[in-house]
Length: 83
Image (cartoon, rainbow, N blue to C red; front, side):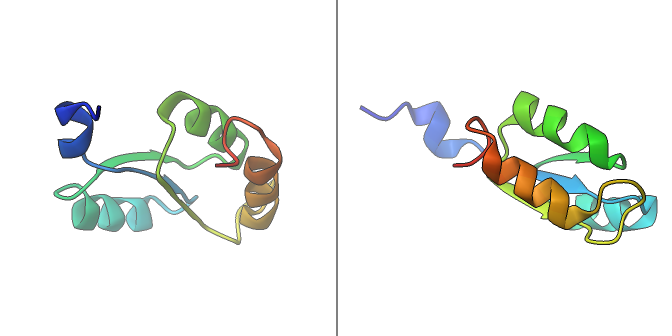
């Protein structure tokens, strides 16, 4: 049987972007319909994904260090975040 709290829970969105203005805009746009988590550090993205179990991950492709495509590959390769 489905827990009623789960049915009414807002979906979790993880935003990974090095531009704080983009994060601010996305948070403002999404916070009424979802729980928004974010990181500006591409290396931290996996840790945040593990701790929040997001339903959706929005990745900036162009980031210093590890780019968004590599973060995507790592998320897909990780058993905990591949679903």
